[in-house]
Each structure stands twice: as structure tokens, then as C-alpha cells.
Length: 475
Image (cartoon, rainbow, N blue to C red; front, side, top):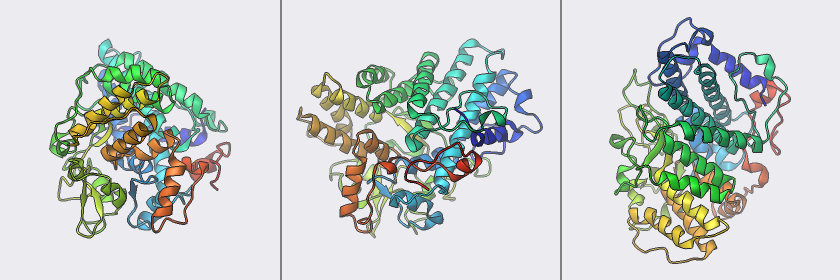
């Protein structure tokens, strides 16, 4: 299903700005002046420029510039917004569960993700008749299918039902009045795209940091896990184990900016400092630094002190992933200062990491009809032992293993945008968050219910097309 607002952004993308000026952080794009999409994408060079554009759109603020990270983390018990009023209160609303349909973080996530989807659709629509090596053509198609699947997976987890657009949009009038597509149908399309991308993508990318077979399989496994198709997810995720990824021996090296795209990173969004007049960096370091620590620091997505205390003294991640200021404020070390300009951060954003695959597999083996507790413990301990924890997991109890997996995911992925979706996937969000609010000063009057498990549809979307209905509980 499609709608006018999506179409409106599509029409913007048809203009020349798509390949040059409409994104603040687009790497490796070919300058385009008066050409439109109709006259473009006629040869391999132009296709590659369009593919670069699709990757570049992942850097937008509403996607992995910051929006998708905070939407998957701040609503949880992992992180918070230090000064809720900063940036117009838009991040604070996510923290306090007072989000409104005019929230700019929510609006940017919707808008920027659909821009990326349209770019994928354009390439998929235009690539077939282009004369180029068939193997490379298949790789490019696989990349676009992967990015489209990732984009819809993000949208459906944040908003629930969303408009499903899988064709290049050229006529806005075709999309008015279509409303939102049920999430079950969106998930079917996601799995279809991923199945096709698995068949097309190579184990090793022909260009650095591009989507590969491993990325498609890891995302496919995450989607199947989310849908509780545990046996199917086990088959898929086990294939990733044979592709050469590994846990780095020292957690300190995982997010070192000088060690980007290491063997633990299955897929990450690329940022770079000092490139193109400091326009290719990320705002994440500044946004996620405690107030007063660097110029313009916003204090968003800071790990809670409670989260910090979950690390044992021997856990190497306690210093590798987080830090503690003299005033007791915890900060993330997953986004580091790489230049004198704090808004020009060079840290990549991890989307899929190898420990995620290990812990997803552990969860599947624990929840599958034919449980395998020994395998659960083995996978869990690979992550724990790398972190310097020496005591092996010694239980077969399903509930105890659930808690152990949940804890390990918190310790491993804090600040990366996983925790809120983990709580929703395991049906624990309401229980865990209301208990957290009850014991946390400043939050004790907050209670959430099922309506809070999705964000509001942006008001601009509803204004553009009244057929798009708001999520329950939001005005």
C-alpha cells in the first residue's frame, strides 16, 4: 500500500538533488546538475552512483545518523536523555513516554527511511536493461534488496503498520488514500527481499563496507527470530558462523575508529571525519556525550547508572564500551571523538555484529520446540568469555537462560539501538519498564501500556493523507 506523503518525498527524489545535495552526509556521490532520473541510470557508472546514494541515505539523521539508534534505545531501561528539554524536548519525549506526533526524531525516521526505500526502488526498477557484468548486476540488486528489507524492518518495529512501497514512484496521485499496510504483509515482503538478496550477494563485498551474504543472513535471522520462527532462524544464523566473522579478542578494539570494518562487524554505516569540508562525519559523538563534556554536547542516549552497575569488575566491556565521569554520569565509548570538531565524528554505526548472531542463536535454541540448553550455554559463553568472564554458564533452566541472554545483550549492545526492540520481541517491555519507573527517581509517575510499544505516525504524514490513521493512544 502507498500514500501521498511517501509519494511527495519520492517526487523530491526524482529531482537532481537525489544524487548530490539532498543528503547532508552522502559519501562518494557523482555530482548531477540538470539530469533527472528519467535520463539517468543508463550505464554501470550511473547505477553505481545510485547505489552509493542508497548507502549514503543511511547516514541521514533520521536513519543511522542518530534517529534509529535512539528510537531503539532511549525508551528502554538502558539509556536516557540527561537534559530532556534539549533539542526542543524531542529526545526527552522518547525517554518520558510523552512522544507526540510532531516529534522531530519520529518524523525524521519516517521521512529519511522512505527516501532510502525510494532510492532502492529506483535502482531495482532501472538496473535490469543496463549493460554490465551480470555478476556485478546481481550484487547491486542484492544490495538494494537488503537495504530495502532493513529499512522496512526498522519502520515496522518503530511504527507498526506502515505503507508498503516496492515499486519506483513517479506519480504522486497513485498513492493518495491508500493508508497503511498491515505489519504481517510488510514482514512477508521483508522476508521475500532477504531471501532474494541471500541468493544474490557474495560472501565478500567487491567494495568496502557493502552488504554481503553474511549481512543478509544475519538480518534474515533477526527477522525470523522477531517472528518467533525459531527453527528457521537457527538454520539461517548457523550459516553466518561459517563465513569468517569472529569476536575480536579485546572489546576495546571493536569500536576503535582506527579499526573500522573489522571481522566482528557484519554490517555498519560508514562515517568519516575531515572529508568534503567536514560534511561526512556523524553528529552521534556530540549528541551522545554528557552535557559540558565537549562543545555542544546534548546528553542524549547516555547509559543509566543502573546499567553501568550491571557490569562486573572483571568485565572488560565496563571500560571498553562505557565510561564514568567524576560527577557519576555514565557515557558511551562506542562513538569517539575523531577530530577537533565534535559534529564531525568518524565512528561508524554498527548495525549487525557477530556477537548479535551468537546471542540470537542462543535465544533460538532456548525457545525452539526442541530446546538445546547445552548449545545455548556454549554460544552465550563465547560472548561472556571474550569479555573476560570466566565462570561458565551452568544451567539448563529455560527461564534462567532467558535472563542470562537478556543480560548479555544489555552488556554487549548498550547504546547501539537494540534494547527496546529486544524487550518488545520478548514481550517484556511493559513489565520491565514499569518496574524500572517505579524504582527510578524522576520516572515514578510514568506507566506504559501496549499503546506505547509503537511510536506515533508523524502528523505531517496524516495531514498529507487523512487515510493514514494514527496509532492508538496518540492524538
